[in-house]
Amino acid sequence: MSRHIKELTKGLFRENPTFIIMLGMCPTLAVTTQLVNALGMGAGVLFVLLFSNIFISLLKNIIPNSVRIPCYVVVIASFVTVVEMVFHAFLPSVYEALGVYLPLIVVNCIILGRAEAFASKNSVLDSALDAIGMGLGFTMSLSLISVIREVIGAGTITFIPIGDWDGVVHIPFMESSPVRVMTLAAGALLLMGYLKAFFQWVTERNAAKAKALENPVQEAKTEEVTE
Amino acid sequence: MSYIGIIVTYVFISNFILVQFMGLCPFIGVSKNSESAIGMGLAVTFVTGVASVVCWCVYEGLLVPLNLQYLKTIAFILVIAALVQLVEMVLKKMSPALYKALGIFLPLITTNCAVLGIALINVDESFNLLESFTSGVSAGLGFTMAIVLMSNIRERLELKPVRRLFKGVPIAFISAGLMALAFMAFDKTLLYNLGLV
Image (cartoon, rainbow over all chains, first blue to last red; front, top):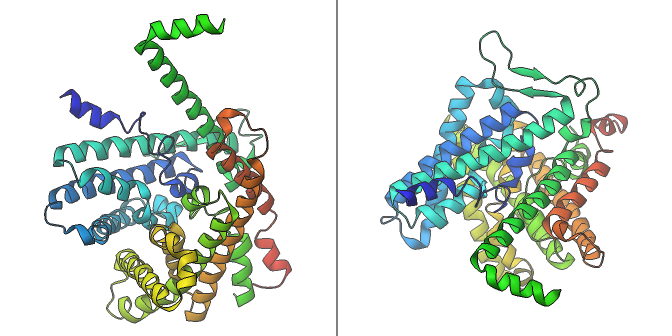
């Protein structure tokens, strides 16, 4: 049981696809101007990742090794087409906002990467859990980037509109004098640089902590020597 | 839109890397030295040019008459995957020198958003055959320009004192952000001022 939970949670933090493995950068930066777009993209990727992982895991013994990549691509492209049609029918505003980046989920490295590195070697259940974890990790990272960009760049947070509520939260002070560059391409790249440095710092600190826990005696000794 | 307008648009105004973020993975991955950056840029330009033409033919010649436009994503990615394989084989046979220069980059291009991106954009903009080819080649040239500039910046950064946490990828992103800031000078008004719309 704990192994299953591990498969599920590794995508959230330890192997987060955006900040740690750095895959699928292109939609990450392009659609994160508003939270609602990030959530739409995240949902699309989660759906495609889940079903492609399940199907590839089911078909792993049938697909010949030499043509596996084209086979994976066809499976992925079929589910992307499904997502495209569903968004077009039920969420036309998100479909418009995502534009060309929605069909580009096909070439998102996360999906092909998980198919090749995980689903083609593991059981259906593990592959599904891996997909959910990775998809949620991707959605979380996108939401984080888009909230930062939208709050600083436009002074609002846009959720999905429900009923009478248009889904927009207005932030006082920020809305009257936003830093517009954050919603533009340059702001996205700058923010990504700073976030990557931050996550590098977090990873290093955690690694140092784990090391200190593993062999505290040795650590103490080296400290004495340096003193 | 005139042909010069298309070139200016895809090289500068909606530069694939700095404005549309397509092909960021090779942009960060392959821009460590300028030789491989030029190789990657040329390989991408070659493939985007050929892929635009072939995808246009597939779309107009096969999908539109059969009323299967909704299959364009699947059709294009298959065409591109096959095309990249074919280009690799032809180059190996016809021009070993070029193959040696571009060879290692070609397999990576199948999953480069830029190639599928330009094929889909050509359909959205309903370009004709020659316009598609022009937009494909200019998108590739814009990619080449950005990746070559970036590799030069990164070669210099190697010699500069950079804070430990920012070394490598973070500083590359920040440099790209500053480049994008400079590229904001090119926008749609440029096209109007030059009378190209």
